[in-house]
Image (cartoon, rainbow, N blue to C red; front, side, top):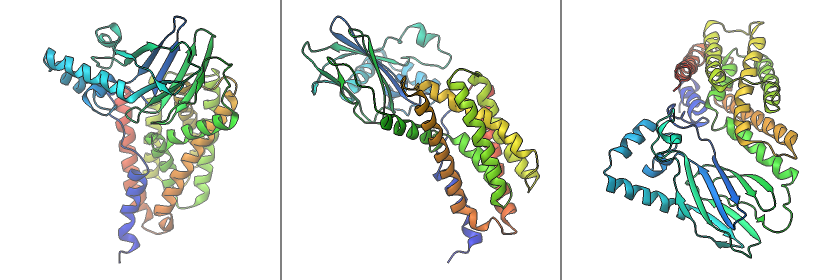
Length: 379
């Protein structure tokens, strides 16, 4: 039977690597959602633009793959091979995406308008095919409802349906592989109810921490590691929560704003600071909650960038914002609970700092420093 002093590394590994994801490659297009805009035109046709890393999709690579390598692989093909790859990519969309009018799938054509255009050739991040797949087809004349579906080959869908005939717009967030609610083509469009909006944004806030927010997770773990008492952790987490909730709210309503090129490196440096201070002291210094509050302001601006990308429902902006905030807090609580479950029993042991705090803080500091350098260099 293993003693507690021998199985703690496995417990710590659970916190750092099972609860958190592998960080994405920094040189990939940062596409968290598949932004999809469906336009129902006055001439009886529809056009849908899906924003997705087409180079990766064409080669069957993950969306966070290195874009330069993807471009090199595509350009190394002969013209015949490349045309065949484009045909297979078109077929992928035709197999994995559905537009159903009154329950019947509609056929559509697939083009890639960024290919050869400035959107691809002048992109800062290397790309050959670009990011836009354009799907066009005909709306059946007597159709009453439209449903949209994208398979699990795509990430969660941030869907906008715009009806040019009635000047109506509807937005929805779809889980991977989920079908949209029917969009009526005749009667007035009913907005989603408050419960649906609340649950959607609660889930999105939670997912932005677990499993997607590795930098935020490591910051929270850095707070957890300092000291062996619960009270210092409560003070720090409270300061962090109040701060990021404040700037998230202000940024979403355009009261404050900072470019992500400034915010993201500072978030990485906040991780480094917390971890290094853990290495230099074993007790909560009076200034630590104040510093954590300041870092929380930065993290809130980072959260706001994601929420701006998603957008808030026009009629329930406050509800969406509150739900997203609550989801973030639930994600943070899961991280802390997992850490307590893994190593909480030994926080009062003499060897806790030597065996857990110091090595774990070194890992956290190293990750933060790596991100800071990559983000400052534009990677």
